[in-house]
Image (cartoon, rainbow, N blue to C red; front, side):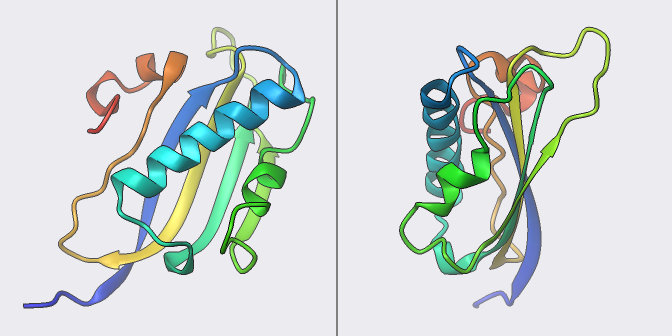
Length: 126
């Protein structure tokens, strides 16, 4: 039985090794690749992706990295600055994606690199 598609929210996070465009771009590409692969997503299933970054990352826009991916021209992308909280994880990039997925499909929220400590229960392929 095929389950109807539902608009579902996916989360994830990673860290950038440095505040450089190259480091941020690499971290975002790795995070987005993990999100797409772990959830068996195609670009046309994505509605929107919001990226948030900690205040110590200002070398480039994460959405600019995603915008250049094949098939992502119709995805609404947004960058925001993460709320500054004392003791927050440094150089952190978070995402919230909305995608059309079957209602019975398990969701995978990738927490990579240093961000794995934010959600040890969801690190890797959980």
